[in-house]
Length: 331
Image (cartoon, rainbow, N blue to C red):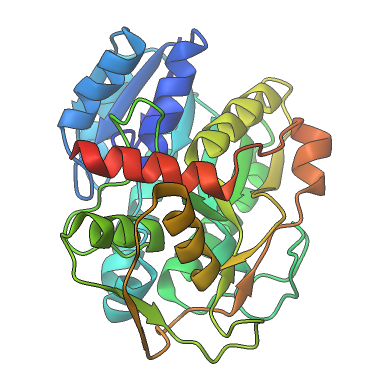
């Protein structure tokens, strides 16, 4: 029996795929390469020395998902596939709702038809919006300041309702904070198409000369240096969190939610400084207006994940910056 990884050629999906293969799991990956590249599939195989089946499908096609489940013996699903840019979601809300919601509904229908009821869902810290007070606990009030976050809230509620209707479903929603870094091999990392929406890939492209300077969106937040503070977690730590969640699924937990973060925050300016110190490269930047949908502060309360999943992030901000630059230099 294999684990299906939707969006497995993406940033977090590819690192999780590597870790699963290295730990002896059988996997199947599907992706439509909307924000990834097909060469990532071969890089995963190169890193691990292991093979797996891949399907180039869009989850908005129920027939394609059904064909995959008819062909493969799937035991559990890790559902990464989604659009994820906050700013773009504000500009194109219907595009985000159609893609993120319809894809998930289709996947759940097909899983149900094939009696596959173990799911790890890729959620987000954006579900905490601006009503809860950081550090966010899993039972903090949820809200959203942008359609991307709203889509995650909707899916979480849908999954909880699904479990309540049929308690044979075992579902864990993992609320990621801000993943950074890359695999130590330098072969895989975050390589978005077009101008990056996330901070560290943008910094890395400025460092490489692909972009002239970094735009810092706002320096008038109520934070020590005026720039937004985020809980940054290394993508390889995040991948390990999925392994821990998979172990939890085997115990039939029902429906549950966990934060994956470090419990510590760093501002935009602190991240720039960390990158400069880790790699010896000066990053030019300018201050511009706040970005719609952003919040000033986002930090995880990580107690529940530490206690119930035995998960704790260990890699540092310096590690994230060093590994990101190592990956960027390989492009």
